Image 1 (cartoon, rainbow, N blue to C red):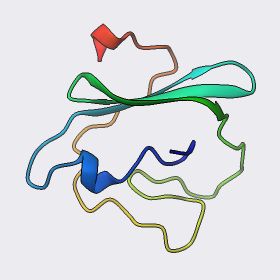
Image 2: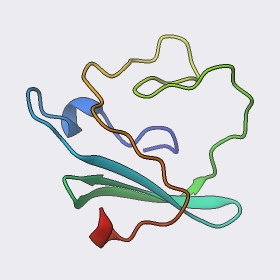
Image 3: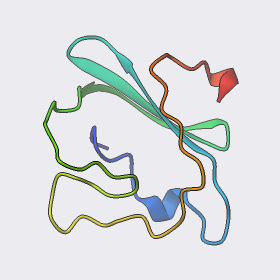
Image 4: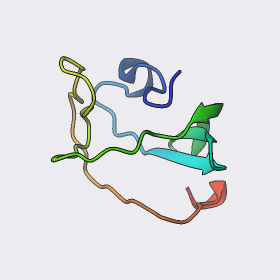
Length: 93
């Protein structure tokens, strides 16, 4: 698992099923912990990863990487998206 990949989407998203997914990032000035929640439960965590790179981009995407040509895209629907700037407690996810 890297700071940009928490595993394969086919293992996480079941075909034909709605899934509530939440990704949190928490940490200090150099490393962070990523936690991926699936339907309210902690599905996977990764500690000690580097902070995401700071970069100026012309476009940002949901369901698509913006780093490398040829990366796969989400073959599904994002029905609702929220971005929080505060820490969310597991009970609020």
